[in-house]
Image (cartoon, rainbow, N blue to C red; front, side, top):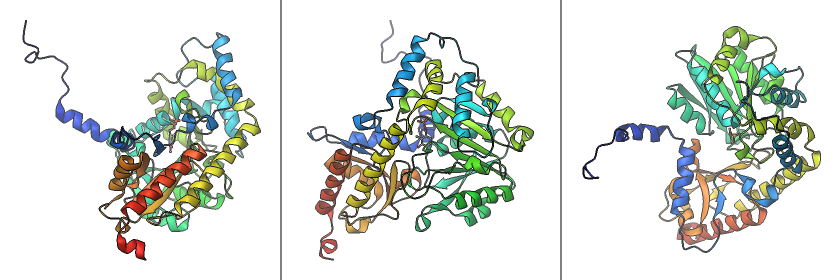
Length: 427
Ligand SMILES: *Cc1c(COP(=O)(O)O)cnc(C)c1O
């Protein structure tokens, strides 16, 4: 037998190809893994995860009892053991249409809804559809959600970034949007309530976005995965409200509002009362894309009508109250850390973007160095802004247990005082 070290197998991964693949893998996931690796294994304190948004790990963010019962009922009914149709079970599509219709001036039908494996798959599908338009480009927000870049890169789709403006409550820089768009621009992506900025866009601003998109002749892709998670003074308005101005593709899921990201149930909805998407072939292309994938488990699809229809106000207000409380803690505690400034108080989603001033720190020159060193010394994970497109900013998740959040931010403050430049302390 050949020596094990010399044996050549037919399935060795080519190093160059693997590197290309790594570049394609979302920076977000890569960053959180590598920051976790920086944590000192001998630190007896718990790791405080302020880097990513998964409150499901904390008992206070447990989902609605109705949702848990719905899953059990779905299993026990033995009605959901077959393969699901390509676009999802009709009863799930109908339930999502009715859920979205509560906030719309017109009615979506079950045929306007495509069931996906979380919102993530809806993002992947729509970006693939855009790629199939030919030499198209897409306008993405900066800061944004890095998986859009990842899917665009994988599809060789050209990305152009417009800024969200901190001095204007993170509104879209609409002048920049007009300047960036050309005859090959297919769509603009809006994330509202916003990950990573924690703002909620007003009715007036959403209308302006719709009017700008109409003028440019481009589609609006509205990522509303944080839909209804608004706890400030600006109410959440779905972009679909402006569907008669411009066709809107809404992406959503139950992951965030019901705090069950592992259940993997999402949707893509075509808000198109004028039939533009049908005529332009986008609907056909969405259907073609969905033909070559497997979709979410029928057990969750079967449970969704009960989850969407029966979850009571009490659960929703508990979650909203908790997010408001943790957002307040986060906003107040950050004020005590001189090297960080806060442009806005969060009004929605689970995040705040804050500005880091590395010049106040000794030996720490960037957001990345700050995050790595903080993980090492304090076992606190925050996301460097560079990952979401803004260098020397940080994205902080407040959707965790309130006492853990306080603990994490106290550790961050202690970290600042340990590393502050003498001149900064004397100011
Ligand atoms: C979490 C998130 C998603 C993905 O949602 P899933 O339902 O978990 O797949 C999509 N977009 C944004 C902006 C998110 O924060």
